[in-house]
Length: 179
Image 1 (cartoon, helix red, strand yellow):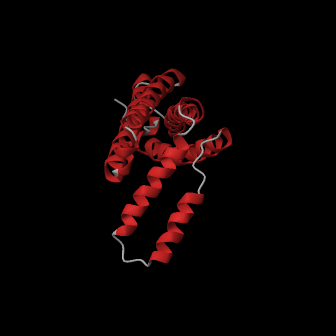
Image 2 (cartoon, rainbow, N blue to C red; image 1 turned 90 degrees about the horizontal axis):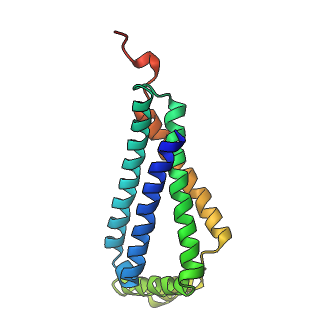
Image 3 (tube, rainbow, N blue to C red; image 1 turned 135 degrees about the vertical axis):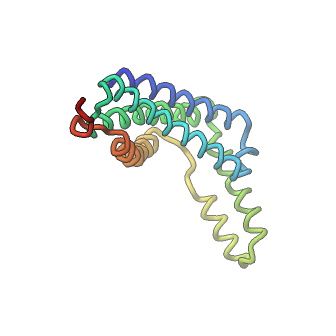
């Protein structure tokens, strides 16, 4: 199980890091097109889930077509933990080593995006200013403690997905017809 989870976890982690690198290289102008960014992230997320399901099914094949809920869950969550760990390490490096001003750039892009959205809105100027001030006061830095927090939240989210995958893919010995 560990070997399969590691293989797929590294594969999915590489996909995650490569996509983040491409988004970073393209620049924040790309991020201002929120729907493109959201669609791309959704596709990557779906691919990671798909590959995790493939990992669980590969482990089930190795076990002659029988896998318990616990084994399926362990394979899925182990794969996701590796993905989350690689992504967290990359994000810490991006924000603290590769581009120390990246948090500020992200904040500026967020403010500009909000200003464009608010310009189209019938909201009063005082409310618009208040909303922009909220974004300006938000801390966009990605420190190690914040990375730990996001890692934990990500694992909780992936844990729920792992439960769903395990329930869908499990095949106990009692479910296999005897010939």
